[in-house]
Structure formats: structure tokens, C-alpha cells
Image 1: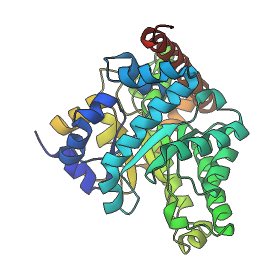
Image 2 (image 1 turned 30 degrees about the vertical axis):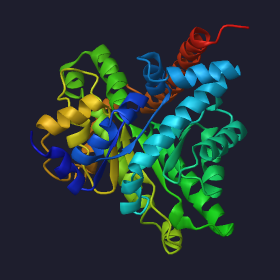
Image 3 (image 1 turned 180 degrees about the vertical axis):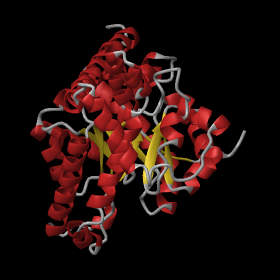
Length: 372
């Protein structure tokens, strides 16, 4: 075992775990990962909770109580998921305190069926923040067109946000704009900007999956040589955009009011193509002030054999732009790809949410007390 995770952390990359379950909490595993593997945050999504609830008996007692109360399946899911997030937030609280709120955070997502409904998303974000009731929570809001004004509104109310499902550079700039607008709103309302935090979850591996498929369709040697290049290029140019926005005059005014930068978070960092090294989206996306949220397999791979060689983003912008341009010249539309990925992302989370509804309903029925 090398200590690649420590080196990664020393380079300014916050290591978050992209997974949560009650077993991970109660067994001491999460505390162990924090203590031994430099994990300083947790992200969740509907898929993660669906998997957790459908496996094992860790939720049986709570489900039995909820069944006895005859709550709706939606209420049951919210009670279960917010309980896990609350407990994980308590385990991470020392990290939160030590980093002055930068890390030690747990993310929980608004109902993905609300992805295109701004008002409902804002209402859901407020409700989740109230239910979890921990300062080290991040409410996940998707970067859809309906989500952007919701981000501004929620940040403006002083609620910290993890913006999710970002695929395109243009949308990422809109997300940063929405965050700054929210901070300006919060400042005008007299809120303490130092207490408001945000990350922008820029999805990585899915970009390669979609573009590689299209490069295979082109089939030329030139196309094959570009496989596995798009996701890193896209993310590196996102970091360039981050540097530009957070060195602007607009940001400087908020910085003077003690606002926090919205850190780029590399999401979907598990490698989908076995032909690529399993640490690709970790070791090739190292730069200060970033977050990498990893599935446990990617975390273990990085700990075992990750080669962290320092900053692998600065100095790559020209090459990254050239690679995306070369892909475009082959007739692959960047705009079309990122729109497909956003649409699919929302659909996948909705499908996971529906699976979660079904499996939770089945558990409620299994554990329901016999009628008198």
C-alpha cells in the first residue's frame, strides 16, 4: 500500500466517498475511512440509497416503525435517507470543524422528479435542510435549466448546495453564475457569507462513454487515437473556467465579504471502460481546491496503486482544447453529446428513485404489523 490518498490530499484534492449505507455508519466503516483513508466527505444519490435499503436488514426496525404508522412511501424514504445523512454528518463533524466548514460534508439530493420544476426544487431543498438539521449538509440540486434559478434562490437563503449533473462547459459557467447571484442575494439579505458553501459536480466518465461510442462509429485510426481523451479534456477546461470566474472583479467583491469559492467536484470518477487505468479520473485530475468523490472501488484502487505525480491540470488547457476540437472535426457534436448526457442523467436518477419507491414499498408491506 502506498499513501497515494495522502499525497492526493496534500495536493489540495478533497477525497469524498460516493456511497453511504446504514451498515457503513453503524459498523464503524465510515469512521475508519475518515481515519485511515483521508476521506473528508460523502455524497449520495437515489441509486446509492436504493442499493442500501434493498440489501440486508439494517433498515428493518425503522421500516417496521414506519409501517406501523402507515406513512406514505415517500415519507418513509425521506425519514430513512435523512436519518443516514444526519448520522454520517455527525461522524464527519470533527472534519467540518477542523476545516472551518470546507469539508466534513454529506450531500443529499432533491427528488429527481422535480429536476425541471424550480419552485418545487426550492421547496424540497428547504425541507431537506430542515429535516437533516446539520450545518455540514449539502443539498444536491441538478444543473438543469429549471435547477439554475433554484440554485440562486437556495444559496440566497443561506443553504449550502452541491450542484449535480454538470456535463458541459457552458452549463458549468451558468452554474457558477447562479452561485454568485445567490451569494449576492444572501449578502443583500445580511446573511453571513462565510457559512455558505457549494461544490459543482462536474461529471467525468460518462463523457468518455458517450464520445468513445461515437468515435468507434467513425472507426478511423484518428478517431481511435482520441478515445479516452474527451472526459479529461472537458474537466480540465472546466477547471480553467473555474479559475477565470473566481479571479473576476465580481468574485472579488464577494471575497471581501468572506464568501467561499464554489469548488469543482469531479463526479462519476469510476472508470467504465476496463481498457483504461482504474485511477484515470483521479490521478489525471489533480489540482488545488478540487474535490474528487469516488466509489469505494476507485478509492481502494487509488490507495493501492494510484500514482499521484502532482498537479495534472495546469498546463493542459491548450492540449485539452485541441483534443475537443479534433473530436468536433470528426463530426461529433459536443453540444449534442452533453445534452444527451444531461437528459440521460435525469432519467437515470428518476428511474433509480422509482426503483427506490418500489423496493421501499415492498419492505413496508413485508414488515407491516398484522391488522387487529
